[in-house]
Structures are given as structure tokens and as C-alpha cells.
Length: 140
Image 1 (cartoon, rainbow, N blue to C red):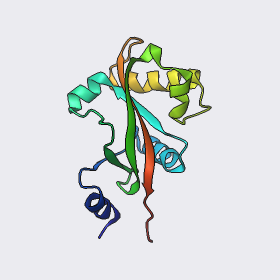
Image 2 (image 1 turned 90 degrees about the horizontal axis):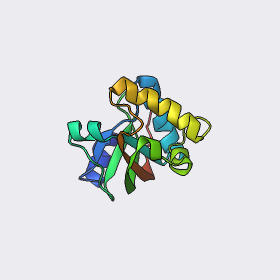
Image 3 (image 1 turned 135 degrees about the vertical axis):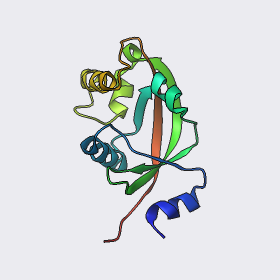
Image 4 (image 1 turned 180 degrees about the vertical axis):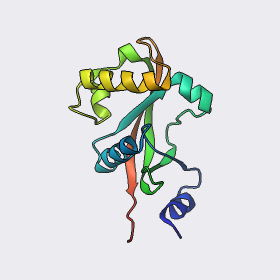
């Protein structure tokens, strides 16, 4: 049984997804999650509505890398609805990226949301916090 099949058997309602919008970003962010440095993420309200995918506290997700390999299982522990301009330094640091500063978070997330076509300072974000509940090891 492949790792992702085992995870789906253990966590029947688990969803599988990856972070980021490029293979490099997917791999980097999956590694940050697995290391415990990244404990939060956010998406645009518009993107969540379009995908009909809103985080639920207590839900499990299988984090995958750019190759679709299972990296870890996370569980959503908190969900915040807020505007881009209202993201705090504390929440930005929980994303675990760059130098962990609010300025870094704002710059990189503005670029990301511009690529998505949704950016504005007043855009609504769905910001979720999570914890790693299981690391997935791969046999070679």
C-alpha cells in the first residue's frame, strides 16, 4: 500500500493538497511544514469560494510535494477571517517563510495574490493554523 493510501485509510476524511503555485514553492513549503517551522497558511476568500474549499477546524490534510508524494498529515487548529492589511506580525511569522517578518510576508503574499489575480490591501483572507500530526516516511 502506498503512503497516501495508508494515510487515507487511517484518516478517512483526509484531503490531499500542496502549498504554493510552483513546483519549487510546493517543495519548499512542504519541507517547512514537515520541519514544524510553518504552522499556518492563508488563501484568498475568492479562491476558497471558487474552489468551494473552506478549512474546517479539526480537519486533516495530507500535504504533498510537487511530485505528489505524501510528506505529512496536518490538522487544522484555528481559522481566521481577516483582511490582507490586518494580518499581524504574529500570524505572518506562523507561515514560517523568509525572515518571518511581517514585511517579508506582505511582499511575498502580495506577489502570490497578484499572480492569482485577487490582490488588494482590503482583500479577505482565510487564514488557517495547523499542527503536524504525522510525518510520512518514504522507502527507496
